[in-house]
Every structure is written in structure tokens, then in C-alpha cells.
Amino acid sequence: MLNTTQFDNLLGPKVPMPTKGNVINLLKVNDLAPEDYAQYRSLGLGDILDIQQPQAKPSLEKEYDNELKANLIEFKFLAFKASEKPTSVALPKRIQLQMRFFSFPEIQTDSVSLVMPGVSSTVQEVIPGKTYFLAKDRIVENRTGRVHQERNSTLTNQDLMKVTFEVDPALSGVKDEDQMLAKYLKEGYLQIEVFDADSKFHFASCKLPLFELLRQQKSQVVRAKSLEICEPDTVEYRGQIQIVMSNTGK
Image (tube, rainbow, N blue to C red; front, side, top):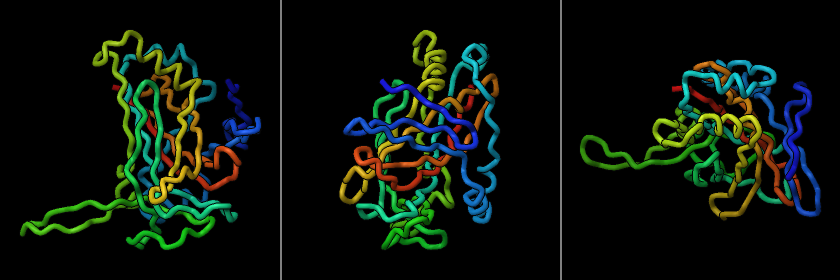
């Protein structure tokens, strides 16, 4: 079992990722970079960036002493930022994510296409260093009964790639489930696997520390993060996943 390691805030927390050959890769998990904030705001997404600042050294005792025992936890996957350097494999044009949170079964998201702002079609080639939003198609029926394909993206619908988990001891009947969740959030990680949706090739992995989701007696906390992803065996850096995560008390 690896011990978790956290460096000073200037470098951001890093997460140990075990690999073959006893090599350990330290993946950075950072707040969104200023240029990413600027891009989101320029695209009219400033409302999702009203992010609260985390408290230092979260306390389990403070988390336990909370009238709101139920927790609604959401992860909104917004964009994929390709590696600035060429990689040993072609960057995927469509991706699919897989993860397991707390006591919930493992889930796999829908496949999504990578799109550029202002361009509805799937990219023909992923350019190193560029940020791509996530898009998927749906079939809609108009008033005349005709159906057509409509494309939505995280640029216009930030809930498009939202994954939600609700932990409520009153509904589950699990004693002290809220305290078990608090311990998990303080000490645990959400491991996210990234697949090429066309080839089904395992493209990359990342680990997201969850301690910033501790509400510390607040009704809600919201964080925007950028997660470095790498190939799990060779530790080759392959880009970043940008997300907004939140925990709302009920």
C-alpha cells in the first residue's frame, strides 16, 4: 500500500501512481491554470468558476459535527487537454471514462467526442497542447415527427458528462455512513481510467484526491481541478482532464 504524499500548495498535491518495475510516477492535481480560467470565461462559462477556496487541514471531527448528514457528490468532466509533447500513441478523438467511488459499483461513462470551441464536428486530429471540450450526439424528434441527430457539448451544457453519487444514511440504513464517507474523502482517491472509445485501448489513468470535498460544516463546496493523466505502465504523460467537483449537503 502506497502512502499518500502532498507537497506545498505552490506545486499542488501529487499522487503516487504505481507502475510495473517498481517505478512510481507522481501525478500533479492542480487548480485550473490562469489561462484555462481565462478561456472558460471568454467562452461564457464564468458562472461555473465561482469556486470556493479550500480550508487548510480539514478536520474529521468538524465533518462529523454536521446537521446535513446526506451528501450529493458530483463530478463534471468538462475538457481534455492534450499533452504538449508528442506521445508514443495517437491521441484519441473520442474517449470513455471508467471509475469507482466509495461503496458504489464501478461505472463507465458514455463515449464522448473531442471538439473545439465553435466546431461541432469531431476533430480529425488532436493537436498537442490544445484544449478540447467533450461532446455526444442524441436523437431528437421535432413537432412533425421527424427525427434528427443533435450534438451537445460541455461547452454549452456543463452537466453533459456529470457523474452523481448520493450518500444518505437515512435512505441506505447504513449506520454512520456519513462518517465512513468522510474518512474515505479525507484519505482516499478516485482513480479514473481513460479509454480510446474507438479502439477500446486503455489510454491513460489518473488519481484525484478527494479531501477538498469535505464540507467542514458548509452546505456546499465546489472545486475546479486539472488532473494529469499518464500511461500506467510506462508513466508517459498524456495530457490533463479538467473537472468541476462538488459536495452538497442535504
